[in-house]
Image (cartoon, rainbow, N blue to C red; front, side, top):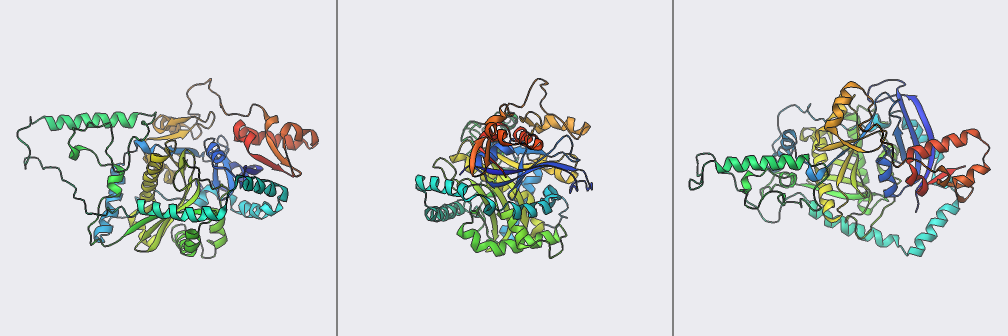
Length: 515
C-alpha cells in the first residue's frame, strides 16, 4: 500500500514544552493515514518525526527551541564511564538484588512525549476524528486491497510467523544469561603472577597501541566494514595476538555478562509488534498501559484522568507504518514495535521503537517509577543500540540508531549528545555532520546551518512539483493535472510548501489527499 497523507500546513504560536514559552513553537504537520517504512525513513532524514499518526517538522529558523534530528553510529559506539556504571548497576541488581544508594538525579534520559507535541495534543485528538480512514473513499482502500490479493498475501499466516519470530528473538535477546556458566578471566594484578619471561614494557606498549587503534576506530566517520562487530565477538581491528584482558569490553559483553545460577532477579527483553497489534501485544496491553499511566503521573505529574487508554493508544500504539517482512530484512520485520522489559515476570519498562530500512528509531520510553534507581532511560538506550547492532548482522544497511531530536538550548535534552559517535542533521541541506563540529556553532546561535559549504543545496529538494502525486475525488493524478481543476489561490501555496518539505522522491511516491 502506498503512503497516504493529509497535509495540515504550518502551525505557529503555540506552547513549547521545552522552554515553556507560551507562543514560541512553530511546526508543519500532516496526518499519515498509512506510510511505508521507506517513506518514513526518507522523511526523518529531512527532519520529520511522528507522534502516533501525526508527522511533524519544526520550522527550524522560526521555532523558539530548534530541534535537530540526531543519530548515533552503533557500529563504532563505545559506552562512556557513566554508561558502564548504569550497566554494572543493573548487573549487580540482577545478580544480588543490590540497590545502589546514590541519588538518581543524574538520570539524564527523561523522555518527554508531551514536550515534543505539547501544543499538538488537542490538534491530534481533533485530527484523529476528522481524518479517520472511514472518511476516505472506499475506492482507495479497495484499490490497495485488490493489489494485496494479487500478491497473494495472507494476514493470518503473517501473524503466526511473527509470533515465532518474536519468540526466537526473545530467546536471542533473553536475559543475557548463557545456557552454561562462563568464567571471565581476570587480568593479572601488577606484580602478582605477571609473566616475567616477557619483556616488561610490552604490555604497556600493547595497551597504547590498542588505545590508538580504538581512537582511530571511533574517529572513522565512514562506518566500519559490514559485519564489523558481531555480538559477543571482539572487534576485528584488534590483532588476534593481543591479550584478551587488555581489550575494552564491548557493549554486548557489558549487557550480557553471565549471572550466577542463583541470581536474585531475571530480566527479559521482548520485542512485540504494536501495529498491526500482534497477539502478544494484545495480551500485554493492559499491563503495559498501567505502567505508562503510573509513569505519566509520577514522573510527569499528570493528573490521574489525563493518561487515558485512548491517549496511550493514540500516541504510543497507533502508527501509520505498514508492516513489512522482506526476506533480506531483519527477523522481526520493519514497522512499529514495543520493546518490553520483563523483570521476574512483570513489565517494568517499555521502549517504543520503529524499525526502518537504515535505522532503529526511538519514539518514547516509559517505565515503572519504582525502578527509577536502575536509570532505565540510559539502560534502554544502550539496549536499543545493542539491538541495532544485532539487526545489522543480518541487514547490513540497518546501521544507525535515531534518538529523535537534540535540543541544545534545553539542558534536559542535551543528554542525547552523550551517545558517541553521533551526527546532527543540517536543517538546510539535510546532510549529517558529526556533533563535535556542530557544538561550537550551537553555543553561539540556537539556529545553525551545519553544512560548511556555502554553495551546497538540498539535493532532494522539490524540483518538479507537477509530478507530485495527488489523491482527489477517488482518483490518483499528478499535481500538474490536479492544479488545472483548482481555482483556490491558497491551494497552490499549500501544495508547494508540502512539496518543499517532503522533497522530490517522497512527493512522487506518497499520495497527497485533497478534498
